[in-house]
Length: 116
Length: 105
Image 1: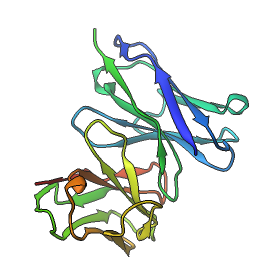
Image 2: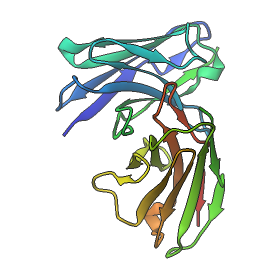
Image 3: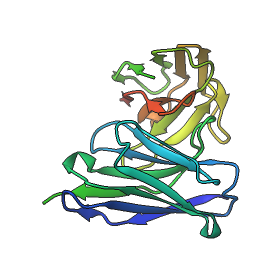
Image 4: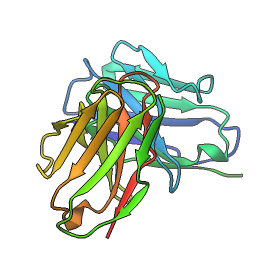
């Protein structure tokens, strides 16, 4: 079955760039939206943005200008870049598949801490 | 689209029937999903399109509603159901989540 595996740096200094990658195993990359969602410690879920296999993106207005989501269909993976991070960006970051009918497949999550 | 989920927490017992509500700031048809999250784990999709049960999810979970008012019902609450539940609208971007409901013993 389809699995998502994500990785990236877990500790950043303020003003650095957060970079995470999510690889899709066991299924097609085409025909789906691929999301990034985050969850600050002890808080709720926040949608960051998504991308489809054609590279068309949508971003949260609250992060627009700092966020870029890109796709590499040849390797069945997609990536998140968030620049100029602050402590407010400290969160568990998840990749997840799906939009309209919900996200039924999620990555394992990556804890990213921003601290000087 | 703003999501108002209530209550933020509730206490219940095994065997109880639990109802969680989600209200949206504008009509979203049936583009409403429900998730369950346990500590340290990724959310799990329970209900999509307001009332469709995700494959593998027990039938004690049910969803209803359309437009702006939605409900998640857990009948015959089981020990493994103690968790936090979130609603999400997928009608338009940015996708948004409710604030969560923690179901405690």
